[in-house]
Length: 336
Ligand code: SAM
Ligand code: SF4
Picture: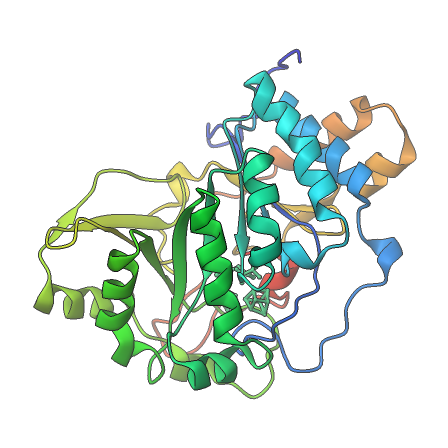
C-alpha cells in the first residue's frame, strides 16, 4: 500500500491511533454508561462492514498504525469477524502495527481464538468488580461467570489481557486490593478509569460516583511500592509498576489536561462521524463522502479537513462541584 503524507494536526501532533466504534448496541447496561432503556440507531445509519473497511483502510494509508475496535460492545455486531479478518491484511503488510479491541468480555468464549487468528495480540476487558451480585448491579444485564469464562478463553488463546475498571466511590473502592491481586495472580495489567460525564444515564449522580485516582493511588501506596513508568500511550493513561507483584497499573484521568499535548488519536462513531477530541462536541461526517463515491479521494480529503480542526484539548471540570464540559453523547456512541 502506498503511504500518503501522514495526518498532522494544527498542533503538530501526528495521528497514529484510530478508535472505531462498530456498534452502539450492547448486551450490558452499565449504570455509568447507559440508561436501562436505550434507543439504538436504525441499521441503515450504521456503517456497513464494507464501509468500515474502506474507512479504516484510508486511515491506515494516511499513517494510522494502531486500530482499536470498540462500541457499544464490538463483539455483538453481526459478522464482526469478517471485519477483523479483513483488517488483518494491514497487519500482514506491516502498515498496521496493532489491531486490538475493548470488550466487556461477554462473547469472548466464542471469539477469543478467531480474534487471535486474525492477528489480535492484546485485548482490554472491562471489569469493575469480582463480586457476582455487584457485577449484576453495575452492568444491570451482565453475569460475572460468563465474563470470567471469556477471560479464561482469551488467555488460553494467547491474548494478553488488560483489565479496565471504572473507579467508583462506594462501589469498588473496597475491592482495590482484591482486584489488584487477582490481576497479578493471572498476569494481567490493570487500569483504573475516572468516571466521565458522558450522556444521559438516568438517575445516577456522577458526582456521587466520582472517586479520584489520586485517592486511589494513595490507597495503593499503603500496601505496595509504586514506581512511576516513563511510558506514555499518547493518551490519558499514566502507568506505575507495583514492585511487589511486578504488574503494571494504569490510571486514566480524562478529566486532567496533562495528556492533550501528546494526543495522537481520533475516534469514529458507528455512524461514521469523526471526533477528534473525546471531550469536545466538534465532529465531522465521513459517512457522506464514503457513500457519495466509490473513489476514496473525497474521503481522504474529508479526513484531512477533520484533522485540521482537531482542538488543542477538552473542557471537563469537576473542580467546582458542578459537572462542566458535560457531554451529551454516550460513551457507547463515541466508543470509550
Ligand atoms: N463495551 C465495551 C466495554 O465495556 O469494554 C467497549 C465500549 S465501553 C463504552 C469502553 C470503556 O468505557 C469501558 O471500559 C467502560 O467502562 C468505559 N466507560 C463507559 N462509560 C464511562 C464513563 N461515563 N466514564 C468512564 N468510563 C466509562
Ligand atoms: Fe456496554 Fe461497555 Fe457501556 Fe458497559 S461500558 S454498557 S459493556 S458499552
